[in-house]
Length: 125
Image (cartoon, rainbow, N blue to C red; front, side, top):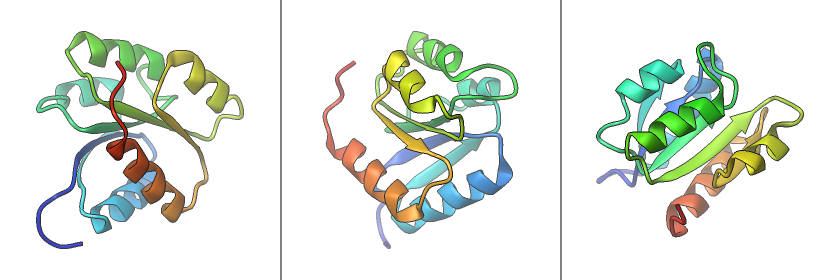
């Protein structure tokens, strides 16, 4: 897609291959992607607030819920999509109250449709 960017997305993922896959897929859809490899780096990049945070549950310096609590305490009120290879990731994502979940590995088309759906839905925080 060419022209104006659809959404600003903050990707919080420590695996370079997954960073490239997600970034490439979503930039092709017209989104502007910022990438952070750790929770601390993501907190530094939180402002301006993104429309969506794509969050790996397991980060080198903190877990997903710790990052999410920090982001919310900084004023973030947008959507959160968790991506994880962890077997219990879906249940964990439901427990921490995020807006969506994708199991790694995932298909880029599944990522695109999930992100599009989340961006269209209202925020309930």
